[in-house]
Length: 161
Image: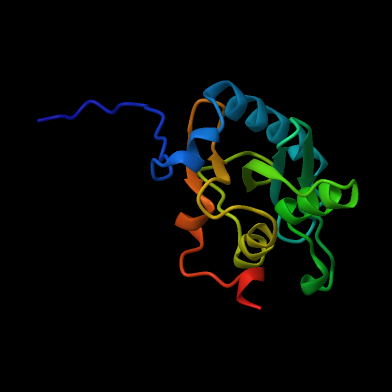
């Protein structure tokens, strides 16, 4: 028996509570994904050829984009997510709602591109565990949304110091 394959958007929503009610709308998510996809060509990835772009939504509605920037000395490489956060923070922003991330080999989005551990920890510095949303996008129609807590459980943050 053949099974018909469905091309459905899979969306994982954070736990339902009062703080998550401020989550992004479908329109906001798609606008962030478009902004990230538009920046993908600006990525500098001559070594891995894995291009990543992100779009960070601040609480005031402004959006800061970022791309990965590789370096021949791999530890000096900066991820797209951290580029977006560092740009926003350097402009005085400290309150964030969501980030969209897309990436793939040779600049073509492929599947879901999750943030690395260092990027998750940077998000943890500035964002609410339960309400900040991380949108992993293969396209505008194919994406998943996670809370920071889902991607970084049992974390260490500023309040632990």
